[in-house]
Length: 354
Image (cartoon, rainbow, N blue to C red; front, side, top):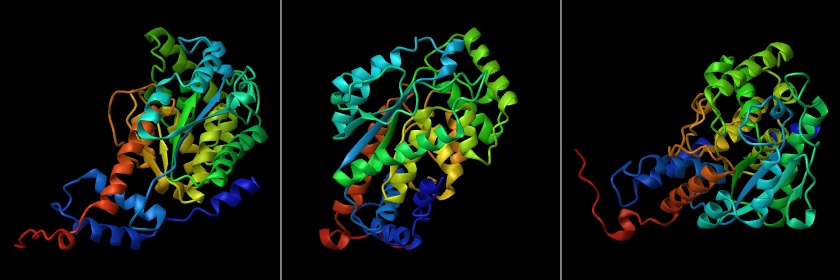
């Protein structure tokens, strides 16, 4: 945990004075006060994260963390487990939804193998951070050892830091791929918030009512079996989590430590944010919720994190697709603060004071 602690120690609360100065600038731009709504709140937070009133988001990166799950053996998904590997190959070929949307917003896609069962050729461009070949079936045993949980968080940190050293990253999005990963995500949410599994468990890839009921039952039994400690996020991750969820948590922490905004996607990356938040409450100040997933527990997870989604498009694909769309809005918000003219510069009269 020493490495994780070192990163956490670099994460500080956002400076209030920058918020004040950013608000003053926004109020002096050629528009009615507050007329750009949530974009103004986004602009202020980006300014505070970057520590300057003219933030520029040049390098945009979306990390897609992939891993398989032993709980898939219980039949909680409509897709076979080999789809994880197949979709990773699709990402690497540029044929998936995330590739299209990332290209649209000018973001790079970096795929990370955190625990795919099948081995992937490193020459394909994938980053190999494999902790194991899929987690264990957490209905019957812990998903991973505590050491592996720590390794997954550290691997997520490494992925960010390695890329940041090449060329500084200005904003980062979180994506995921892993058949059955809504099941550990639901379990994590239930464990951390104390909610009943029925309240937080959705239909994932679109399972029918019978499979959904089975999914709820499995999560409830696993929580009663393992008793994960909500005050110890590593314990939660080890007992009922996933390697890619740990990787997302680590990436969020590393981004915050480098003063880089982290944009979470849907339910799975929000589960990673829950783990990161339990490790370091201040990290949430650096996190943007991209959209409201159609997955049942997502709004409850965002409420726990006190985050408001930028979009609500009834999406549930994952991969980082929502994060890609939100990055466009965040970048536009930063440009308003940086590029829009003030009343004085434009020679425009201010509103009359009452």
